[in-house]
Image (cartoon, rainbow, N blue to C red; front, top):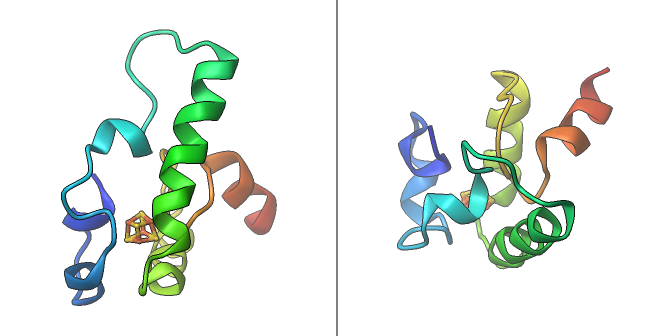
Length: 83
Ligand code: SF4
């Protein structure tokens, strides 16, 4: 699932519209640490200008989304908020 497929109206204003989901989610194959860091920086740069960042992050936290960048935060960063 991506932010654009989440239920609700907020995704209509998502800045990630038109961006590849591959930027926001890790690939199925091994991803080197530096490649992952670069990919996450790219995704977070999109999120930084997103008008619905707060809604997106709240949604991901509420459903405990285990994968990807949502609301400008990685899964690891979100876990630190909920644990
Ligand atoms: S905060 Fe990021 S992932 Fe969420 S809708 Fe906006 S651009 Fe997409």
